[in-house]
Image (cartoon, rainbow, N blue to C red; front, top):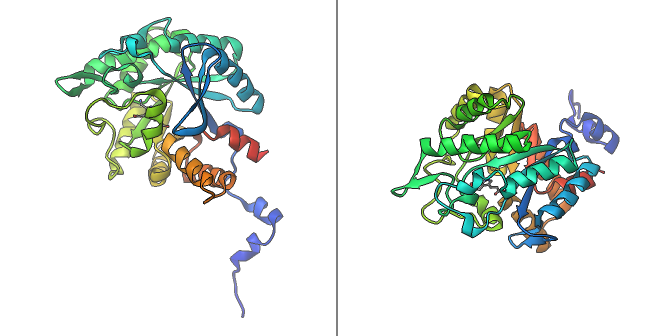
Length: 324
Ligand code: PBG
């Protein structure tokens, strides 16, 4: 048989395959989400996320030192708010001595080079478990945006390098940018969850932070998974309003959206390999149905290949170890 072109030539040995590989993961690709709780000396496994932990601040600092030593350079902070501090307006989110603000300061002091990103949304602080203020069973936009802007300034003044609004309210990026400028935080970045879908795959995370919505769902603010063009519109608007990095979330059921946005924008694109995506791999591996290590690298590789410059993932440490 005579063939002009044989594609298998480039696949015949590990050396050749390595030479022509298009997508290469590095520790610089990863953002490490951290869950912080009140207390001391606490490292408690999240039942729906085996192998992932909630830590008190002292233990979080130890973890951050370890991450830095491994070459992981950015963390995304989430805190678990005590129940008695929750209310409809998320008042505790603005407390200059709240757990988030204390955590930012302590991590900055311990590992100043680490890039600290912070979650900005009301759900961990909301007595309703919603990302915004509730009035007459509705999540109201504009009043929520005011709190998100104040929350961002509060995180910036504690030392956050990036604020990461994950709420999907309209106009919040512009409002946050303006508030940061007005308060002289001209170096604080905004990583916007621009295309965040209403997804069943957030379940394990809501369990981790005890932040499941108390009524209804999040479909009036998070996007419908049937939509693609809307994701581009959301993202372009966020960039216009001042987002430095845009994010697509979840990642795996949305690889097409990641590519679509990567082709449409000229800012770094990130994707969030979320809790349900983590839990599925863990569960299948535990059953002996897939090989966990290979699944981790293939999954993260697919997200990067789709177009993500950055990946927030609970597998960051595993990946760094596996990449060796
Ligand atoms: C909410 C928020 C969620 C996640 C990050 N921020 C969940 C939600 O929208 O209910 C999910 C992260 C994950 O599932 O890993 N502001």
